[in-house]
Image 1 (spheres, helix red, strand yellow):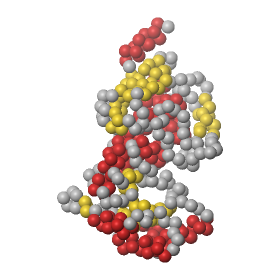
Image 2: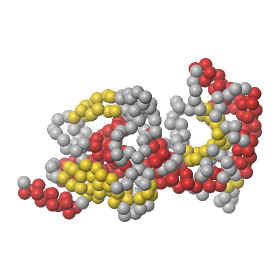
Image 3: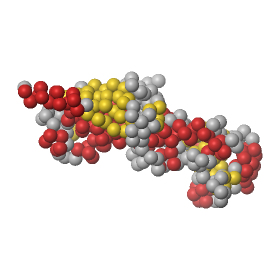
Image 4: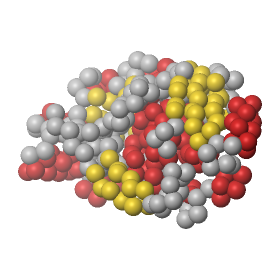
Length: 355
């Protein structure tokens, strides 16, 4: 497979401790044909996206933090050439994710920083565990700290919840949705993979998903699926096609249409067929009936009223997939900190002052 690098050099103000001149940054787009940055810490590659610029996202995060002045506090308090060691500390139990991305942040700020890890993306961490360290210029470590931690904490929160839900959903597979933080689509979905989930469509371009609004505008579920079949045939496109159903009648209608013609349909979404009960439990009888009606002819996806408390029961109905927007839209970040080794910092500081 060909490897294509999308390179766009830009000149930005020198916000880090390197030189007084502007430095030149080369952005390498993470594309479907060039999906990875080669670090030993990358236990799992990010998902594919044809236009997503991972380094660009990192640079954007660093730039919004630095503004036009850079880190004025560090420049005022930290000697330019002072070197320190800082340790990554897990402050609660969870699944660690974002190690590879954090390393990219540090190397983007200062390629001379040395980063080491005792864990890899997807490993369990417990409260109090030091799972990595970074050594080099103190100013640059502090500049990179918050951006690296923001990525890592969010990704670890997503991975931790995904792991819990994936285990509970078995034998069904857990999927996220497009309810991701704006600009962080690939990052959020990468975290889901690290946590043991599967990715739903990346965006509007890689899968047909016929939702309720499409059905309403098209004049019904049969018309909507028929229109998709015609469009894909005319454009000579081959991709997965999913249609959302909300009632057993709609499931019957889709199956009737599919039995009468050659369709591109591959998956049927069963939306809100999990009914909450007053006692906090859920009734999955309608979902189970829908799965039995489909009888393995198409993949099935349960959606709606999916929580950590309900997902096990949903997973026992025979559905292929269970999708949950909660994996990414309201996840709790995992508490992680970066602590400077103060004894080493003081020792180096005394040497710097004597010099």
